Amino acid sequence: MAVTIKEVMVEKQDAAFAELLRVWESSVRVTHSFLSEREIGRIKEYVPEALRKTPHLLVAEEDGALVAFAGISGRKLEMLFVASDKRGRGIGKELLQCAIDEHAVNELTVNEQNRAAIGFYEHMGFKAYARSDTDEQGGPYQILFMKKI
Image 1 (cartoon, rainbow, N blue to C red):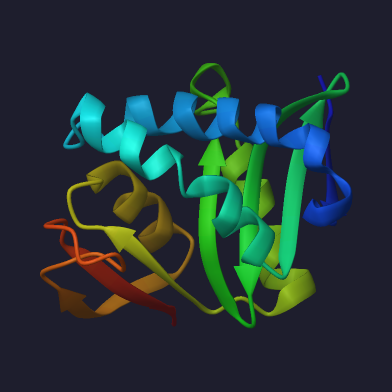
Image 2 (image 1 turned 90 degrees about the vertical axis):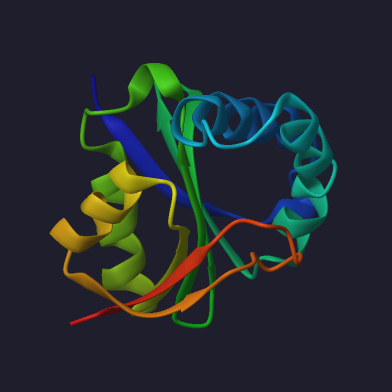
């Protein structure tokens, strides 16, 4: 089945929040095993605002259903989430390549505990250059800063 990638404007797509949140939660539950149920719930409350603040939002659709999305600000990938049942099919790679080709993305951050994501980003040409002991919200989750080499 073919995947279509397009850019959407979030403020005009408020009805899409439920689908974006579904994809986000599905992805996080598979890739962020280091988060507790409580933490997932807490973070989920901030996802709509993060989406609204993201200047560029790419969505991947398959048969009209949203299956993945990526958020971009400047040349930085702010987020990339693929629905759990769509992982391993190249959708994340397609989204990231689109972000690189169309928005010149060359940097990102990733949770250090998310080893699969780090491997994926390294495979796509990114290399860690710095580390933080806390995430962007001050939580106890180590972050790696990566740049395209």
